[in-house]
Length: 169
Image 1 (cartoon, rainbow, N blue to C red):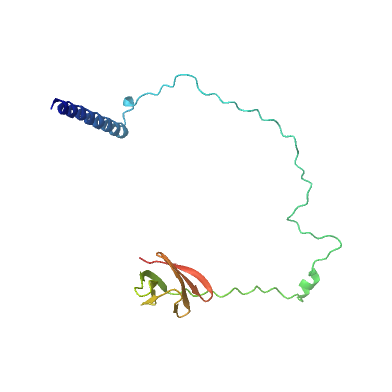
Image 2 (spheres, rainbow, N blue to C red):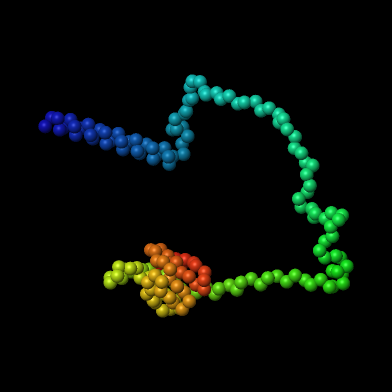
């Protein structure tokens, strides 16, 4: 009984000390009084590092190269179109190549997937233009083909271009 009582007093003393340290640290962190903070005294030798002396460069930059941004027109060469042709209007203007038409984004959302109990394959739940559809891998909705199903996105192919549709929560 005496052994248990001594252990109880020892543990109680340790609990009070630990809580005292915690409260003191919180008070020191919140308080703005500079007098309570301990002063740091650095005693002893400090570590000295050796900084090497830099030597002057032993080379020179050679700047005698041609300017890469100037047009390269030598005396023997002429430009493909002369100034007279441009002034006479005989040169056809270069027309820009038309860009490939932008594909209209499909109004398709990925809502999640379920497991097919019959063949243990994933079945994606898709919403296209307000109607909900269930598709397995390789399934088609209009021109949209489902390539693969994962938990957060599906990989689809639309008019020859592959893209990912992320899940909408």
